[in-house]
Image (cartoon, rainbow, N blue to C red; front, side, top):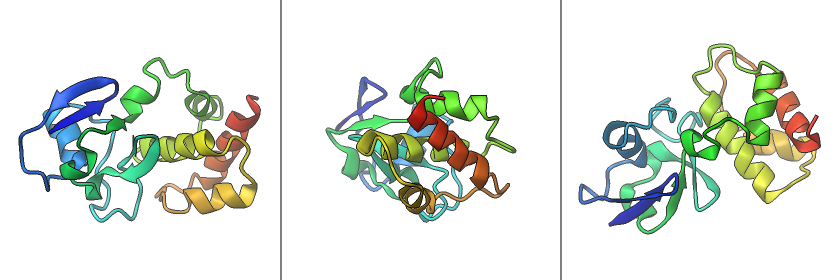
Length: 149
């Protein structure tokens, strides 16, 4: 099967039930996407598949055949995506482990809804866990990305 990752097409002939996360990390060397819980509950492994935020730990390779996958490395290689810029400007991360997933979830939300309400932000981001408790800074950065401030 073929899969496009960060704009580059790759052929995959392995086990179709292999989680996308392991393909990205172990076969392509894209380690920005993190393993957190392994059951799609924490959001550390969030990537985009055809623009939609998905959990790579629970997405089998068969589910991405002939689709476009974007990882944190492909969101904006130079860090110029508005969400990445807001994260940097507001110094969001503490330990940083969950932040790639947080950024990918926020970026997918803003691509689908340019001006989400606070309730929509909270609802969308609720599935991404930050063990350091940076939720207020995450929310502030999303709001900053919306306004471009």
